[in-house]
Image (tube, rainbow, N blue to C red; front, side):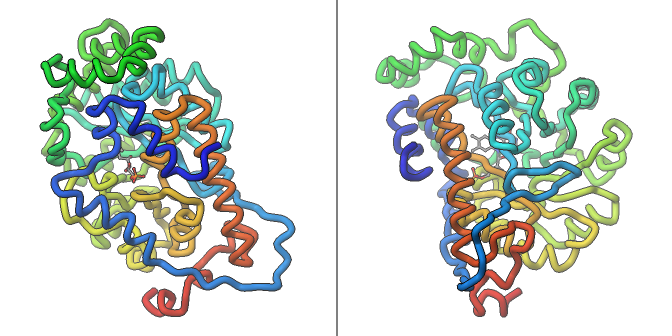
Length: 383
Ligand code: FNR
């Protein structure tokens, strides 16, 4: 195991093609939202308590009727096949082994059926809604039949954020081989060889064209070619309820009023998220607004948070500020890109170890007991 998530990131940078690493790592425009996400965690200070019995530590929490080994979910990320062949299956298996749910993205590079075949662990479905609603309805129907438990509608991606690095690198879906891209590929022969040997690359390149389950491929193609349904509004909640019996979460909420509306409409939870700094530039960091949202809607609505989680202590901070759990975006992907299945397993284990160390050093050995008392007086005063 490498020392920190940042070491997996450094190794991922070496191993991936430039376009793949930048797609994974980068943010929108000048990266202000992206760096604000990290800054929010860096500024938060704990208030440890001493001489408490911390022999036994319990990191588990209950979320959406499921037990999570720690307050974290492996979040939805699209195009994971860029980093490792059959990446969704690898992530699903690693999440299950770590006792965490895995949220499969609409823009997943594997079919839902194939992810389910790889694990009997908890799977959630992340939904993007295309202009043709039947595509999303079909995905929900298939996910339900496969025993996916929770639905997560992403609401912050009506259009894609402007990502300059993709333009600079000539990266777009479906992949078009420009001279720049060919040079990038030529400089990363190991990445190319792995993809070709294990079938990752053809799967990816042909994604929009290949045979298979038509609806998901259509959904993926639409998601990637940016044909989102931009008319989507709050009426979508009733529509989702007609097609999904389990918990429904909205991912990408960043305002107290929207969280209130979500609760009024009977949504089960919201994920405060700025999409890892990849969408709106100069958006608030989810951690900054978390206390206000929890204060307004924390009873009756589960509040999740994501963006910038790179340490187990970050998970503890989110939980102390009132989040039920966090979503992990890039952290497991750095592990995947650096070292494949072992890398993902190690990153998830490392976050768990760091979380448990934090609980013990805070003098709060049970994750369910973490609250604002674990934060410095200065931060408590602002809650
Ligand atoms: C994402 N994210 C995302 N979200 C979503 O709802 N559907 C998706 O398909 C994707 N795809 C995606 C790809 C990549 C490469 C990244 C990094 C992120 C956003 C993701 O779920 C999550 O909100 C952020 O990644 C959280 O921030 P961190 O943990 O990456 O800093």
